[in-house]
Image (cartoon, rainbow, N blue to C red; front, side, top):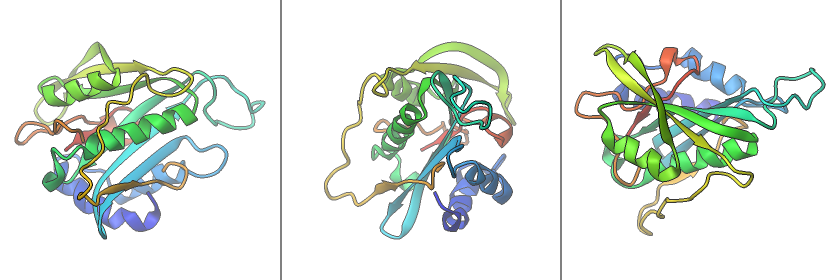
Length: 217
């Protein structure tokens, strides 16, 4: 994701997350942490022709300090946090969400993350099944995490190995489908459609500041 993608990202953000859409400033802040040797973010967008149809983001923090205290760059043992996954409604069920998630996990490996965390609505069973296919397992619950609605979040974790995620369950898109992910400047759904139930949020990041996960698509 680059700064010139933000207008299109905001349009999709507001369509999918009307109750708690991220602001322009929040995306600028995330992108500010995606550049240089101390980058802690990765964001990717997907385009169908010249139209943006999806985006996803990852944050990484902690781990072994390999910079002598001069930097906050994630290192060995860092923890990745899936911040958001969003897919345009007319691309739900195409496998795009899974491709975006696979891209995030690839970059979690590049950040040397030991594990990756996310939150998902307890009533979003389809999304949970997708994450389980990638190797995520539930480890807890956050009460009333998604507002409005007071919906609990299921916290899921995936352990990384030295080569990246433990499996690659993503089937390629049909050859006729022109959608392809395009990466970010150093921070930059799911074959089974992990979109939330009608009117739902999907996986949501708490406080939009980078502490949880949001998924729609």
